[in-house]
Length: 191
Ligand code: GAR
Image 1 (cartoon, rainbow, N blue to C red):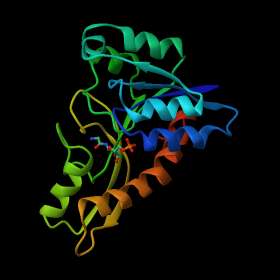
Image 2: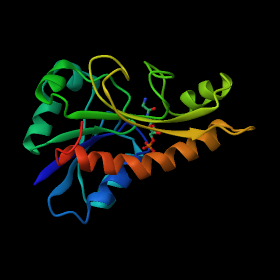
Image 3: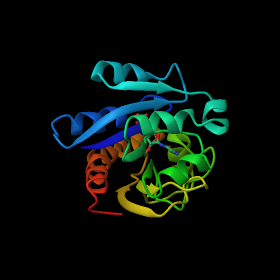
């Protein structure tokens, strides 16, 4: 059995898609959904899906082994960040080498870095007049959005595109590709 843990800070639509994708699998399971925000909607989604949750504070994350302990207790094989906004600390990076991945709603290395998330990314892409945006799935390291790229997919930025319409297109791509890439990684076929 391979166990996945998902970290999300907010809405959690990717977390839900990923969890549903693996519901029918016998050998892969989303075991735990973690959040740094006790009011995040992702926690409600987790409850509806019957998946255990773990909420942690900044202090827990950066100055204790509480999160590491929760991941180890759930026999986590892969840590999946899905709309998670904090930089991952060394204790986790060391314990899960190449086993922590993130999705970013743009074509890295452009439009990444601290503070670049959600609609801010889409607005920056549109303001810069980019013809394409897309998604990037990458390994996580000690620098925001800078780990080795695993997968990218482009989408056209149309004339009159708004951050909201681009977000919708990007979410569609995320829902389609993130679960499949996670499956490959967790089964050891990629990355
Ligand atoms: C997703 O589009 C994800 O790529 C992005 O946040 C959104 C979360 O949506 N992540 C980042 O911007 C990370 N820098 P969701 O909570 O509905 O899955």
